[in-house]
Length: 297
Image (cartoon, rainbow, N blue to C red; front, side, top):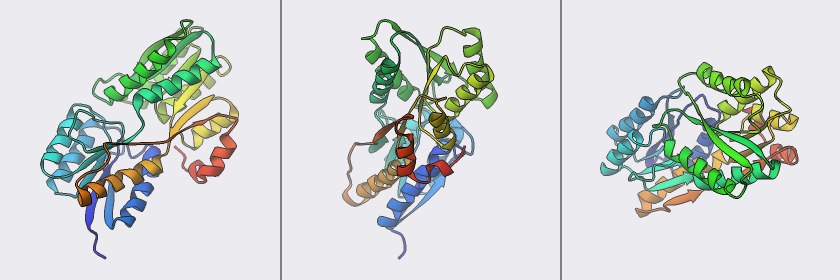
């Protein structure tokens, strides 16, 4: 059958293992609704290219756009132009709530921060938590700010636990590693727990900890996983990882676009389930996800 719809899934960074897990879910949903979905995005992180992909999809008059949000200002403006042109837009993983997008598929950022707070408080009674955030206010700053707000709100009940944010440059892997190295070397006794919001930073933290012999003195809490992260959880170098279901996020985003096309409406927010992974359930998790461990960084 000729496809009814041609839609695009715009990834934040194709080299990031998260998106190759989102795309199969999107393709599965596309097969059910008789659509074609293509994966677009830059190989490495790029605000301009991500926004440009939305503009290209709008100019091509595609039937729908499922997109990441890497810049709360530029991405929102591009989304608004697409919707004004009659093209439905769904955001996934991070939201652009002030834009005209019709649906967000992903995790509530404030709730994610609360989850990190519960984990940290269960693992420590006192000390300093450092959460790694972007140093560029344009890149998913709203979502990161909400995560920090949720974390801070939960930890308000624990006055002996401190919280600071460390801004990490996304300009290069070297710049990010340098910031993490300076954190661990310059303040060797001041950090009890590090919270990372992406796989790349999580892996860099562990690598620096190994290099400087800090593996027994700092807890690492991460968001999202890949084979290397799961291996570190299994070995105890990473205490806990919170992960969403990227396959389901991809699936739900295309289903939402199809609903908009057929019914002219869909849910404003489709939540993604979260799972907490540590050494007590890592084997069960690996058995459940099956091929996740085959998706290395």
